[in-house]
Image (cartoon, rainbow, N blue to C red; front, side, top):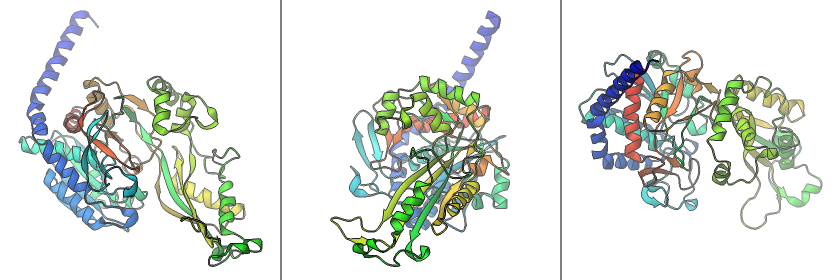
Length: 494
């Protein structure tokens, strides 16, 4: 480019940026003025735990979700029935030329208060050394904290008397933490599907900043199936129908050992590589472009810090850091979440249990399907003589993929770069979310996660979301809320 042309373009871009800053200043002011209100909204939400796995406050949780939507300016807010817990739906028509979808979840994981440094449903504000003031509670980061930050951004638009730069189609479910077994049923209702067909893409609020300030944009996510394998004497026809004295192990078969033998066939001798017949046969290998993304990402990460955060000293098979990242993004997995049988209380109880259960999750990469993985698991067990092992699928869904050039991704990159952050592109999350409902048939929409801010402890004790950051590497609540203001404008621009 000619030097004069370059300078003219640079000056024009600077003028546009300044105009955008001036245009958003009233919104930023509202964000700062209403921080206490946003914190109280989040605290009230966390204090009503909606836990699908325990059927706890699910009706109340959906009602609160709908109330929050109406408060944020959505119209046509409705409870969406399903064969499980209901969803919540709403529209926000700003008269804009572009429409985007927003995905929320209103359920949270279980919590054992004895493991927490602050009660999980008290939503207390506590000081976290090296981080600042955080809100601690179940759902603080997964996902009520970032969702509340997005709602606070909408509140800023309303209080400033501004219209949103894009229209929004909203959907929330109450079963994400149990594998979203009925989410596709909710989205595929004709009136909801029709609304999402008008969207250019979907996003889910999430605080994306790591403690070092880095941000990774995942271009998809692994799929998953969650299953229970149950071995029982009654179904097997060989062990006891009820718990009996352990001395009888000398002459009576054990359903617990039966389950262990069945589990042993699911992985190779290394105890890691999936060995289920036909399970990974359709798995798509990492492409050269995806491997290059991972190579670039590896140079921006600190292996020692990653190991410290995970509490591990070795990667599987003692592979190097780069290969560990390739495995994380590209390898299907067979994981035992929990293994229960018989007595596990204090002291001993000499019984031969009549039943043993294993909870598993199987992660899937592109070209694999939840339906295919379940069928492969059942066929594998039957082929090896374990057809008596009951297989219960409790939830799951297919993998997702989103092009790096899609509008939802480019808008996210623009906001991050505007904040001085060069985000890392990553092939797919190692975890899962039900984005397949949007990225797959019939919608085939790009879908991503977005947001500044930091939090951690999802599914773990002492989960937190940063409210007032004392660390220059990441934003607190106000910065997170402002990022959603910026993102909505960038979505309109792309």
